[in-house]
Amino acid sequence: MEDTKISEATNTTTTTTITATKTTTTTTNSSDNNNNNSEIDNSTDNLEQPTVEGGDIEDLSSYILSKIDESSTVTGRPARKYSEQDTSTPEWFNHKKHFFILSFSGKPIYSRYGDEVALNTFMASLSAMSSFVESSNDDLRYITAGNYQFVFIQKNPLNLVCIANTGEPYQMIKQQLEYIHALIISVLTQSNIKAVFEAKYDLRDLLGGTDKYLDNFIHQTNSDFSILLNSVNCLRLNNNIRNSITNILSNRKCDSLLFSYLISGNKLISTVKHKKTPSLKSQDIHIVMNYVLSTSSFKESESWIPICLPNYNDSGFLHLYICYLHADVCLLLFSSQAESFYQMNEIKTLISKDLEQESIVDELNKAVALHDYTTVYTEVPNLLHFLYKNRSSNYSTYPIFSPPYSIHKKEKKRLFRLYQHIINHVNNSSNKPHKYYYHTSATETIIVAISNHHELYATFSPLETKKNVFESFTFLLQWITKDNSIIIQ
Image (cartoon, rainbow, N blue to C red; front, side, top):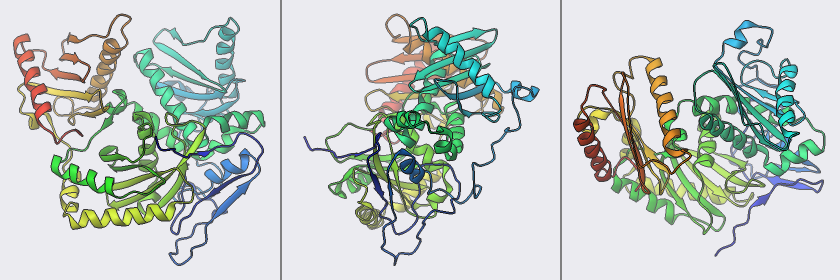
């Protein structure tokens, strides 16, 4: 097995050096803020490498958060939406879903709505609840109070809390909190976060530029079916074209290159693993996609950022090369070495030339423009919507909303919530997971089939007979198996 060398994050006072070998714009996974002290070199003639050397965790984290997008405020943290709200304003209580991040001692770090400093007393109360249960050698999981649910997860040294009036299952909210925690780890690593608290630093100063990423990610977890399925959505693309792209990615590599990804928005086009190393988990891929989608400057130039992938190695950084080959097609190259920017740049150039020479660019751009499909494309009778996940690869596909769900936003949200309950019921049952599940109500009928290979959730009109539903469901499963363009095989 080949050894994979990962840049380890320090949790001591030894010297740490991060080198960004880049000749365009060096950017990191923080919010879209501009830093006056940043050394950003857009000249291709200047080959000097911007280097930061620090003696402790503050220097490391300051570097990570210093190279940021120009679209936000020049100094300080960007103005937060609803920052004027707190427990003294009635509007704050009208939000249906709050997220909080605080230390074990109750120190505020983040609030989705309002300013966390103004909510200091409220967060201290949340911390007291958790500490009271912990004093009995137990963990506080959730509290139900009327229509509200208080969900807690403890990730030393952080507490993450969600207060929701949405009717979501506990397991679904817990999954969302775990995604948020993973996003924080991706900025600093788990060992660095612990070192921050041991050194008595304020974590808010180090995460101050990431509020936008947290906000966007929270919004995404409340509406993205691929996150709900713990999967990655695939771009609909002709299988021969996809195979050609995969071959190109596979042929262009170097010693430090671990993974090559080609994405469009939050959809995966193709991926290649170049080393005998664990594959990236869905959660890590969503974190990377969130950074790319949330940072407008990535479209303007090549970028080279350190990033921690929590499910791959939560104590060290990989180094990510980001470059848009076309308007909506982005190349991601993951390297184990901080000094390999130029190698990644050369690989990008070769991949771009190969795509041009094999006349793939036009087909790829066409697929990106026409990637959405409706249930009409399936030709399955009476079908209103469906979700499909390949359990072996964790890839998924689903159509965009069509009537009656496309007419009203509330109908989309209602169907999303219904899927949450059904997915939670069939996968988190106290007994063995369900192989088949049939749900019917006044608004729709949903049938589910779970096997070792796949999960399929299909929605039909409530007026359809069971016979018609089962026939259409079988037809849908056959169609998904035969159509090799909707999901990576």
